[in-house]
Length: 134
Image (cartoon, rainbow, N blue to C red; front, side):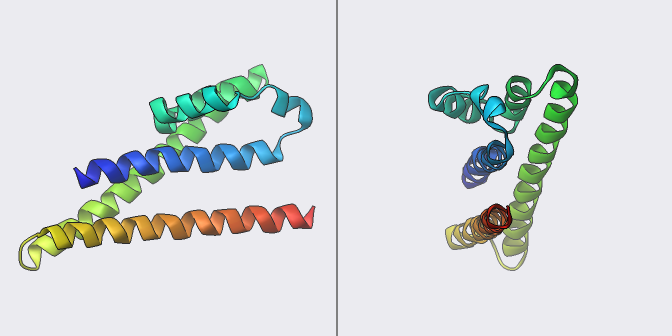
């Protein structure tokens, strides 16, 4: 159950972060083509990393839609899978050391979530620094 929660949270957070970053780099004309807030939220919630396909389909010219969307969707799926792998590895290590308890699972959840929060914080810091440079 906790593993599902980790995958679900990161399956939503990563596409939102990437799409926010992408939106900041867009011209005014490209930004006008993006989804409104309700459509964007529904797409990210319903499809998670696969919402990258729709995001690039809507925001990119015809030639780049498919390959950029597929690349972005694959990259975000790979990140979610890496986080899931790290979480499972922490839980398995805790269970091998003497039996998995609710505390061990909670600590593994906290560790992977803290890793993700730090990763997203660094991402937002990089975006802020880049924005100040331009």
